[in-house]
Length: 151
Image (cartoon, rainbow, N blue to C red; front, side, top):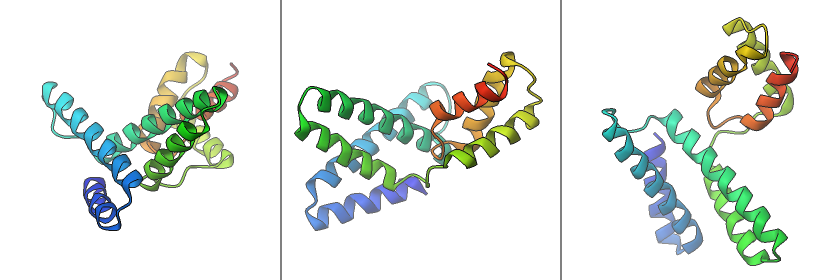
């Protein structure tokens, strides 16, 4: 499903002459193909949509960090380019969960895995990543899990 969305977006960007969007979509397609090749090396088929969403989330995180570095260095042009790529990446991702929804999901995951202490934090985060890839900021979710487990 996401692969078709990438192909469609690439064609639309070419037709519209939107070079920035086209470059960003091509980066996404290249990253997905790279991960497909890595998966084949491990004896798996191509990436599933959940894995692609996790990859997109990682790419957004990288670009946010780069944009912050560029902004601090006074390179607003490069920071703006990174933010433009973030917008393209996020256009393929489901809406991000707000803080209240993250808390609800964390409570459900804690109950699901039977977590009782900080030792179980990894299990809870793994359950969240399996269910909410691309929909949740996992740095924020980890902090909520830590607080809920008394860490």
